[in-house]
Every structure is written in structure tokens, then in C-alpha cells.
Length: 334
Image (cartoon, rainbow, N blue to C red; front, side):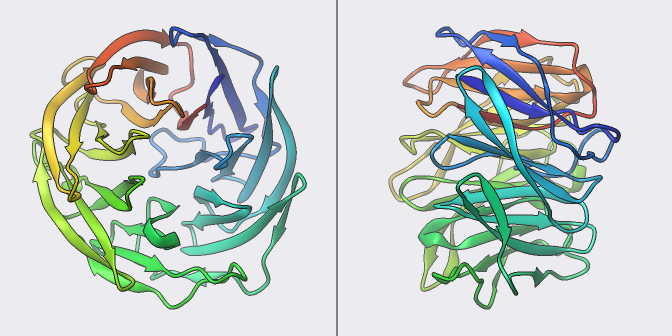
């Protein structure tokens, strides 16, 4: 089993891979070139720049500098590059479901659709959907009811698109965010959307909210519940849908939330996991498929951190892998 992140280097963007053992500890293996370039700058503003396919057999990596998408096979000895394709200007987030792939390009904001079949990426004709110039989106992903959801930090909105069997997107619906600066999101198995709200870097004002889909629209359940931390941006949900974990970039904390049966959020522990309290750098995160381990990048320290997750959602630190570039971005665990 593996944990993946990208170097996001401006010259040769590498997929950085760690093998994880049964106790969650990480051992680095040889990096693999994506045959493209990252942004070359720290703190890539996105969630989902490194994403696993739904079956965990492939990993997709966006190249924000070269404007391309790379696809890798997850092999027993590590990842193998299979294909690359042009994916708009400054692509920063990618999502896959049943062979349908959508990329969020941010330089000229747009969504671009692809088919993933037999180890190759193919652009879907007429799939490009322009987004508002001031959208400043951070993530694309498949949400409840198959809707494609895009956060819009610049407009404090969430945009949802129905997806046709052809792979083309229908007309978008816009929902005003419960709190300012919606950033990342994750979906529970029961169809609840958990959204982070960074509050434009207002210290101590970060929050999360939850939504359910009703007649194609997102209906708020829990509106903008604060966690007392700063710059909450990334979200993951446990496989059983009982807990959500959010990382706070500005202060090194992982917060744990309980997701109730009705989709409401309850803050259980604002500092369930810590790198160093008050230290910047904690960013992208992911849970393993069985929910036993949570991993996150501490970009400013050039590290990948790992925690064991027990049945109650308590985190216990188990591993730190260092020596990484501070430009690193994205994380996916399998």
C-alpha cells in the first residue's frame, strides 16, 4: 500500500511515493516523473491535485506549470506512468468516477472532461465549461447524486453541475456558501457534503459546514460552524461516514468532526492531531481506504505525517517522512 504526493517542481514534476507498512509507517521509494511541470512555488492553492481513481488502481496528477494531466498505474512495486494529456491552463484539481475524469483549470478558469479507458486519457469533445473569471476555485469533485461540485473562493459560492451519461455537464446551479472562502470538500457515503471555509485567513475564524442535495440543489444542514483554529482548507471523511477531518494550514492542527445521521456537524476535537501547535504548513490530507490511517503534508517543513485512526476517531501519530521540497502539493493514500 502507498501514499502519494507531488513535488510540484517547475522543472520536472515528480510523483513522490511512500510504501506504508501494516503499522502505518512510511518508506520512500523511487520518484517517478510526470513528464511535466508544477507551479514551482509553495502552497499550491487546491485540494485534489493528486487523486486516486475510485478503484484505487490508478493515480492522477495535475501539472499546474505545464498545463497537463498525468495518469499512473498503481503497481506492486510502485507507480508507472501510463499517459499524459493537455488539461487547460494551471490545472490544480482532478476527480474520477467510473472512467469519467474532470480537471479544474485555474489560469483561465474552466472544467475539462476526459475519458479514462484502457490506460489512456481522451478528451471529451465540447466538454469544456468556462467558470467565472473571479471564481478562484480550489477543488473539483463528484458530489452527492453524481453532481460535480466546484468550490468558488472568489465568490463565496458552491457550483454544482449535473452529469449526463455522455459525460457532458448540464447547466450549473449556484449555492451561496454558509461561510466565506469555501475551499475544499468531501462527501460521506450517505450523500452529505462537508465543506471547509478558510475565512480569508482571519485568525481563529475558520469553519466547516454541511449540505445535502435536494432537487439538484445544495441545501445547508450545518451552517459555518467554527473550530477556533485558522485557515481550515482540506477535508476528508471516514469510510463509514461518521467522522470528518479538516486540516488548518495556519496553525498545524487537524480537527475532528462527528457527522450525525441527519448530516449535521459536531466539533469533537479542534486539535485531534498536531504537527506543532501554531506552526504553519499542514495542508493536503487523505485517509487510507480502510480508514485506519490519516496522512497529511506539512509543506513548510517538507514532511509527510501519518496518524493511526481508532474507532472513535482518535488520532495517534505513527510516522514522519522528511526531506521533501516545500513546493510539494496534494496527497492520496491507498
